[in-house]
Length: 294
Figure 1 (cartoon, rainbow, N blue to C red):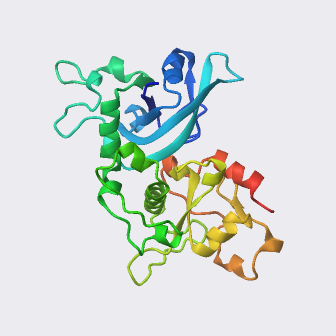
Figure 2: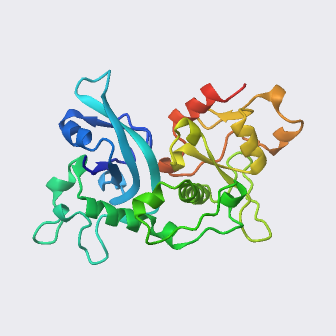
Figure 3: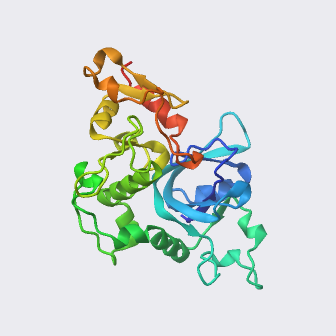
């Protein structure tokens, strides 16, 4: 096995579903197959206004052929989790996290950076992983946080515990996911548009997975919605759903009386302005086909 970096643009022309599958041409097949069962990092390049940063970690579960294009393949992704903050591809001192990306003159190697899938040594992988999750590792959960309201156990995380072990723990993943969804939606319920702050100064919202973790849904902002508790309950039970244009769908005969007054008059839900944070149509389709009762 070998760890790899997966390059993915925000406007990727490949058939990617972030956190679920990564689409790539045949020239990278050997590197992808070598990484099966091992960790990977997501990297966003400069092209198309990208951040030039590492922004998530995951694991490649298996690789399989694209049935429509003989020269392309898919990597099935599991254990996906975004970083609280992207990690720039260069450190503050301008050195490179990935040593092979640097030229002798200190400039980046365009050739090495041009590879869509590139191998990365274990020690460099772990350094980037720790840098990416440092904000979450450094701050202990607050009993008043939304993750506590969601029933997440308040397990104390040891900063010195191996980073890969910590990232695999459900309480840690739930906390990171909830914080990212809350930030993306500005702590505002996607369905009602309301931003309600409690007496402790925290937003009364919960981070809902569109495709649940129990059904192998990823901890990706694109698989998340910020919802008030009541709306979260309705969404999980299939009383409401969302179409690909972010129009709210309702199972009207099953809705509690008068609850439709909470919905935004536009008939659409509120989504983040950046495409990289908006719900992925693949997850919305899953919810409509497997949960929605309308």
